[in-house]
Image (cartoon, rainbow, N blue to C red):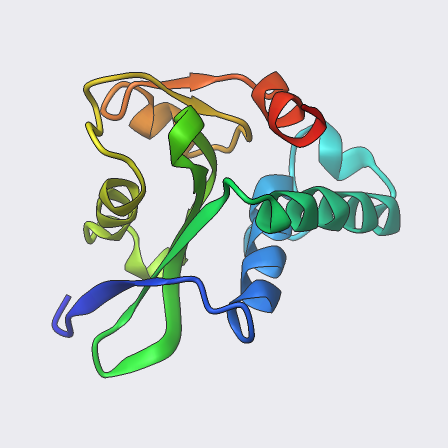
Length: 155
């Protein structure tokens, strides 16, 4: 990667639209080669999925314990390369996303380090399963627990 990136705080006025869109599509499994998505969620009526998933994402983003970090170019802070949504106090990873052209460049690791102290030393519960989770599961000691999301949002 020729240009340098940095990790910045979530910008509530500009970042939510991109984060919600990439979260919804990535969680559904939408790719260029698989535009309909994959897995059981892809079988849902899309309007139902997108409406319900947006409510979940909005609830997570508005939760007081949520931390969102964004990777951006040094010379263009508005250009989002990737982002991480977490609850560091509870050691929860809600979602990590890095745009396709920027993967395998250290952006995901930098985002995880920005969100979690002791990355890889103590387990982190992942509340959303994606195709990339198995790749990082051992490196970052991720444990899949979708019910941790409900514990956060419902008390």
